[in-house]
Length: 391
Image (cartoon, rainbow, N blue to C red; front, side, top):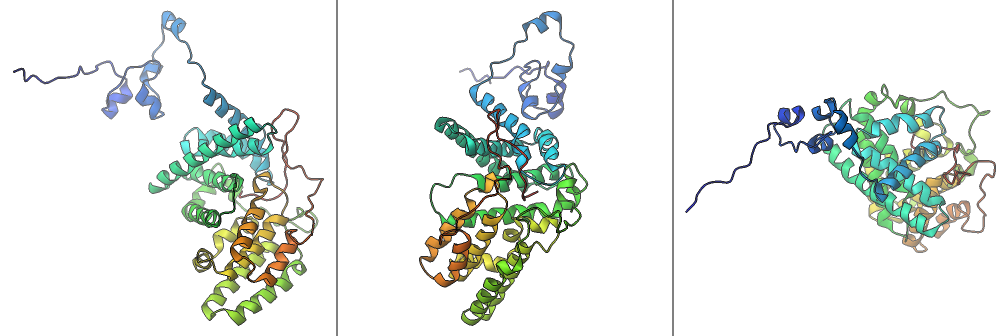
């Protein structure tokens, strides 16, 4: 009986990088497969090609899905990047610095392609194209979440913190821009959990981010005066104070002492968000969901009507702010979920948000003077949207 063992012939012509890592090299030229996978330079590529080798090099055909990704990246750099912030110079960071950083990290490039896909799907007039862009965006978004969770298991470092911060902003936008086929309370709860989870991870590295390529996104700007304040950034206190005070009194009379303190604190945070009395970052639409207490979130998870009424007031804030394509329909979706869950309970306290949301006949008006990011002459989505963003 032949007991000889099969052996494989060791490669002695592998690239230097594979030899250093002590892994098998497939000797593919101009770059071996392991070096391509690990995104490192390959010594094969550094060799001076002979004239006969240069003549034999032919690029592989570009596949349809690759062409679609190139289209999404082009749209992001030429259009989507201009719709994500109103801060001076920040859009240029999206267009240049963020895209450059994304070539180093898979999770960031997927998040960019996801947001761009949602952007194109939002304005496409062709049902097949809308479906194509939407499906591509959802696939990239789901991949982003998977990769992002894996990277968060590792330590955040001064090197990768910039990509993690940028990706967190793209996740915020994508979470609002996703299609919403039906009212689902769990979708709202998942959104709060997502924002709070990402914020918890990113916040400790903000000192590093504040001195990196995205410093302008996080460093506060000088306070805006009443003469140059963007429309919609602040609302007059009379607009909501009487309702908030009456609602707080109702909670005092009907809730336990512990629940009342939670609800009162949540209303105070919401009021600060309405009037814009805090620094630049605080005026972000996403500040309130991040800052609410775990106790209030527990009330939401438990389906407590009082907590849902407060959430309905937050929907008014999103609804009344300057128009953004990626927010379009999200406050209405959350508000519809709240109304369905309440099913008529606390109807008197839902009247104010219902009036402000246009449910009781008040017609919603959009400023015709603001550019909404609708398709331009080139077929891609236009730019220069004013308002607020996660950045």
